[in-house]
Image (cartoon, rainbow, N blue to C red; front, side, top):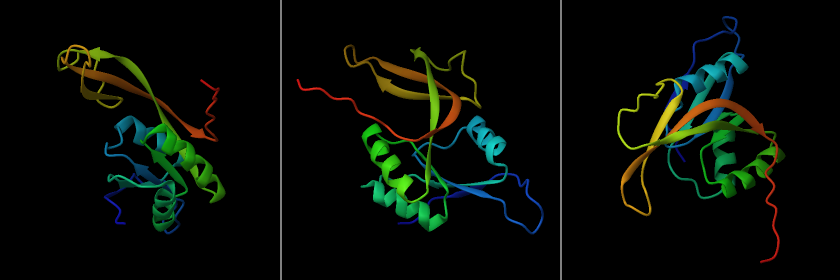
Length: 156
């Protein structure tokens, strides 16, 4: 597997020493400027390694993290995949970070007057009932560490 582009933030460490935290970013979307800033505030010097292609298994994600020396993974993937990834990553000492994105509203026109470039993303979609093109507007709030995901089931 080949890793996509590497993005290094502005250094805050001592010259000649590497205090850099490596984060594997699993998403076809680029990190928002506010997300990169939040990671810098938390970790100081960071290297964000982006992988934008689909993955087959959580083991593939763990392999990529080990390949690039990532201590953290930020996945933008289906919840069932993330649940398994959290479990597998914890066995390898890798932490999973989730971006908390608040749903602002559905926009029916662009540009949205409430759009904040550093914090927001708009996902184009279609209303399933009417077929009308809509834009789902989300705003980055914060990152959190996922320690586990619990699915609560009951028989039908």
